[in-house]
Image 1 (cartoon, rainbow, N blue to C red):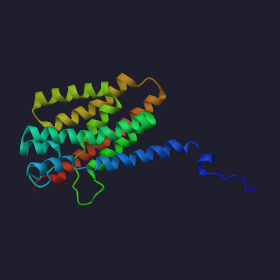
Image 2: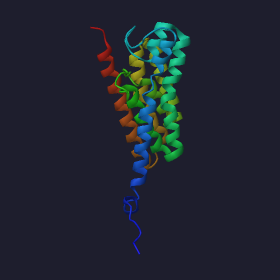
Image 3: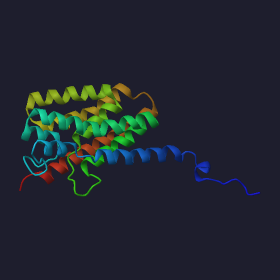
Image 4: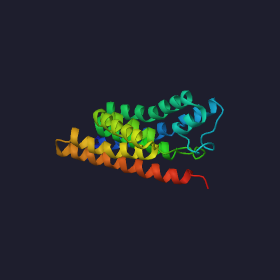
Length: 207
């Protein structure tokens, strides 16, 4: 009689959450690669990747085609991050949402399909932030909106909102070592967003 097979996960059961999170990250990356703004742009006869500020994002669609197409593009760009993050939250809790969300942000910046041009990942990051901590998101959104009203400059206002989010997260939610670790995850998301925003902004600048 043969002995029962021994599987790797029987020896290392802690690997299961890691494998699940990795799978959620891949799902997020694929969904995040969906070019929502390019899709809307082509429907209305524009190419945001080569026109305007040459950024395939909802803000450029708004500038080129008006608020209707811009809002539609924004909803799609938000949705491609919110959807996988919500799936991750349902499957594996907060860290599942984080893994799927990071994947979605990466997909929005560097799509899975080489023919597609990535954006700045701002809308995707906003969607992930909403799922990870709605109260902190509300605070960051309010501060970012205030910064825009004061300075009338979109880029600094967005950066301000992104910077405020982990601070609001810490003040509203961190009460244990586990939550402090979660704050580190939020910090990683924040750094990816700020770096991606400014690098892509320089890459897409004219000249």
